[in-house]
Image (cartoon, rainbow, N blue to C red; front, side, top):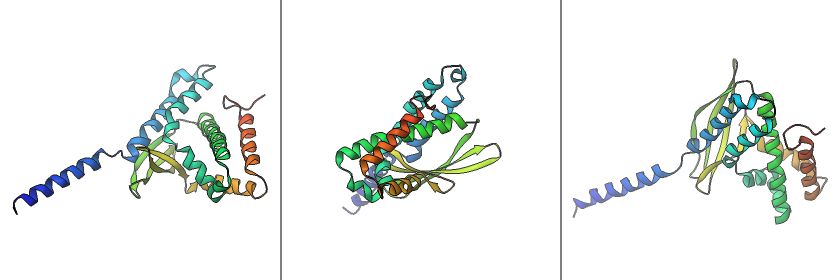
Length: 207
């Protein structure tokens, strides 16, 4: 009897180790799409005239699933999220997602100069939260960039980005809080939609 116990324990630990090993790792989910997006920025086929929009949509198709836009929206509104009706919440997520898409793609397409992203590692904060650490290499400059991620529906997704210690979420939260102190949720949503129209569907300002 006493000889069986160690064997059982070994089997239990072995099963637990296999189960843990089967869990997706944050960097494994985040790194490939980002590196593929960088490769698309460098792809010579998109330097030809008329390929701006095609490149833009291909990049977005590649990276959009690594973001959890519902959590990003909730955290950007903070306590104000509860004052939105379910319909307003859905409309806000849709409009805010489009705003983030425009801002992100406009920035990387308009300002990309052969930068490289080096992934440094990951810190597991809990079973469902982690930080993926990286740095952007721009000529002789290194820019720290950390991705805060959450395990959502079996996949690690980004809910905040810290660039040189500046949080994307906190930046938008400050702006939204200021607007909502004076205006309604519907007006905030209209503001975001108007901003999206200004940017245009191809990432360039409308004429």
